[in-house]
Structure formats: C-alpha cells, structure tokens
Amino acid sequence: MRNKTSVTEFIILGFSSHRDGNLILFVVFLCLYIMTVLGNLLLLVAISVDPALHTPMYFFLRNLSFLEMCYTSVTLPKVLADLLSTRRTISFLGCALQLAFFLFFAGSECFLLVSMAYDRYCAICNPLRYTTIMNKRVCLQLSGGSWVCGTLVALEHTIFVFTLPFCSSNVIDHFFCEIQPLLRLVCGDTYWNEIQIVVGAAIILLLPLLLILVSYLYIISTILKIRSTTGRRRAFSTCSSHLIVVTLFYGMAMVMYLRPKASFSPDVNKLLSLFYSVVTPILNPIVYSLRNREVKDALRKTGMKLFS
Image (tube, rainbow, N blue to C red; front, side, top):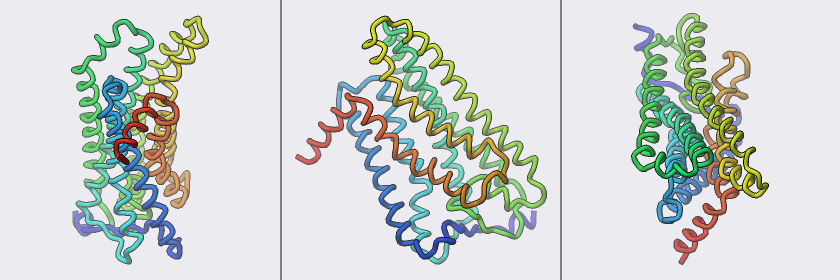
C-alpha cells in the first residue's frame, strides 16, 4: 500500500526521443485533430439537418461520429499540450480518468458497430419488415446498450489496473495512459495481470466481432440470391462503408491487445496507438462520404448552407 499510494502523478515520455521535431509533430497532430473533429462534426450536422437521412442507418452513423470526436479528444489535446511543455505530467486521478474515458468510447464503438451490422442485416434480409423491426425505440435501445457496455468495459479495466500496486517508478513510456505501459509500472510479476487483460480484451473484441460476422454471413447469403447484378451491387454498397470501418477498428484493436507485452518495442506500440486513436477516427467521415451518394449530397447541401 505504501508503494501504491506513493505514486501521486505520472510522467508521460510521449515523443521525447524526437524532441527536435516537437514543433513539427505539434502542427501535424493539431491538423489531424482539427480534421477529425470538423469532419465528424460536419457529418453529424449533415445527417441531423437532412430529413432524407433520418433513418436507422444514419442514426447509428451519427452516434459513431460523436464517439469518434470524443475518442480522439481524450488523448490528442493532452498530447498537444505536452509537445509544447517541458513538464509532461498527469495526476494519478487524471491518468485513471483518461484511461476510463478512452476505454468507454472504444468499448461503446465496439458494440455500436454490432448495432450497425444488425441494422444492415434487417435492411437486406428483411426489407419488408425493416421499418417495423428497426423502429425508433429499438434504435434507442441498441445505441443505449452500446453506451452501457462501454461503461462496464471502462469501469472493469480501470478499476482493475489502478488497484494494482505501483512501484516507485512513475514514468509512462507512451503518449497517454494506456493499459500496457501502465502494467510495466506495477510491482512484481505482471504475467497473470496481462493474461486477465488479454482475456478481457478477447471477450470485448471477439464477441462483438463474432456477432458482426454472423450478420454478414446472412447478408452475403441474401445478396447472392439476388438475380440482377445491379441489385446485388446496390445491396452490397450499403454495407461496404461499414465493413471498411469494422476492418480498420477491429484490426488495429486486436493487434494492440491480443498479443504478448513484449511483441513490439515501445516506439512501435506508440505508432500503432497513433493509428487506432488518431488516424482511424479521421477515416470515418472520409469512408462514409466517399462511398455513399446520400451522404455526399447531404454534405454538399450543408456546406452550401454554411458558406452562404
């Protein structure tokens, strides 16, 4: 208990090995952050103001855009501040809150992607009953359930990590309070702690992914039964954007969490974390706007209204 409570703050190394390029990194990360927030915010506004997009599919997309903005805002503002500061510290409570919110938004997105897959399953496999099945109450329940699952994920992992005894070292070799770097500061052998984290991550990641795969097995089976090539192409086009987002999100998350601690060096870990915490959220509005004509039309209308 003495060792655990002696750590009142953490020092975040961040990108200290590239200190000469701090100003360049600051400009790059600032541009990425602005693009992520503005891109997702514009997509959210376009869906909200266009009556043609007030459907279950775009209701979930609006939730996804909001999650992506918050997801990035948990880490990047602190990274930007640290790049311009010589004292890169974060309090014990602040670190716990950062990890909790990061896991909350990431966990919520996992289960929201499942809701979006179920929506596509209903639209393609049960088109005549789609509006009945995916009514407003069901949409609210699915999105609310995603947020509740995210809350449970955040509470479980944050409480688990921050009740472990930390040793005298308080230096986090990362750019934010992430689980794996924090485990390196725990006293004693952390093998079983890592096993518990991997098992928990496997349940959180693989169970939703399994539900998504089952949904798409039914979707693909139904699409193949459509006789016309145009009909098959139109049906698949409504799912392609979601498939790309699922592949990016789950692919990077599984690389980060379903592997041994010593698989990659700290620098490689930082690079992977940058990809799924910074790059992936910026791709969401790009993927949906480039591959969806309705979204492009709504964005064009919204842009014209804003500039006029």
